[in-house]
Length: 136
Image (cartoon, rainbow, N blue to C red):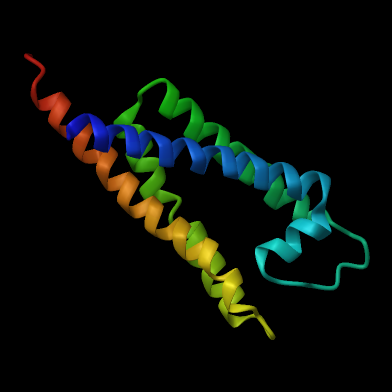
């Protein structure tokens, strides 16, 4: 059972990291398409500076998650996931308050909030258990 939960957490965290890399890359390469998928549409006058800012941050966070996951830095990964959950919470509220928002555009942000909380708490719990077994 323990191994199954660990595998599920690993899989969801891997997918989360990869999706953030994908989303960040899409904001860098296809900013307008990424904006629509995000759930808002703003007039930019073909100035995608903020899209690029968002893109590089999503890409960097996705890479950080993947590096911490693959190096088994569980405590740091737990702290990172819980801390960055503020991002999808804010994204959810932005999309929710956007004029003419589509309800289905809220689900990815809500899913990210739930994954951040559950996975972050899991990795902190696992790291705490493993560190309590270490002799000083």
